[in-house]
Length: 247
Image (cartoon, rainbow, N blue to C red; front, side):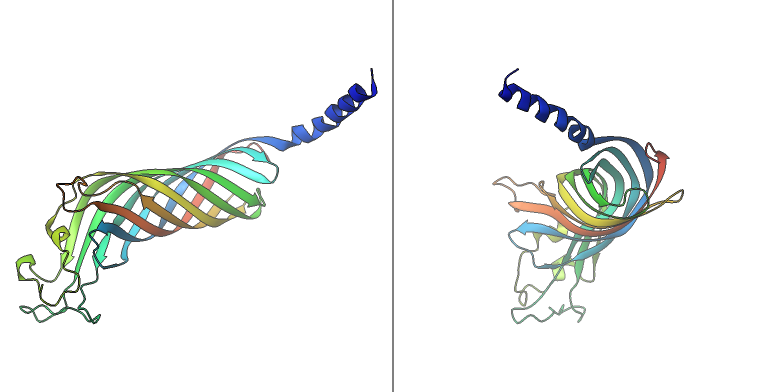
């Protein structure tokens, strides 16, 4: 054996313990519930001036931990949620004052709530104390949703709206029902997890979702070229262990 082969052999043997430590297998399953608050808007083109629409969200959560790679705990994280998304219009004059309805004498208000069943599926990466204590995590992945209903909250009749004083005169959306019930997009979140042995895991997360689909048709014959959902969610989750491979 020459010197070159001897060196390569030593390097290969010394690398074996390190290679064995790179991927520490897990087979951990946890399930639980989540609840939170969502602040949503719709990306209309032509533009519709909006403030954030507030709504509730909540549902079931499942997490499968498959590996610890170096200091990173790798998991697959999924949810089935109910969410109240939608938009809330800012009906203002050119000098940023509320538009007063000439029939009711009140400031015009309009919001639409769209109820969704949403299913996100994430790659979940965490760093910190795995068994007891605090972890920080990042997760991202695709999300699909299905509209199951909608409702409108307004204080004026569409035919009696004050168009003269409005700075933004785009209002076709006020009478249009959702046309595309299927929604899809990408979501990502950052959060902190606190684990207590024999009790469970508590996760606090901030998440952003950007829809890649539109709630209305987007052909040249349609009114809106774009009408995608986006939201910011603050969420609290509780998980309890079903299987645990590392004590």
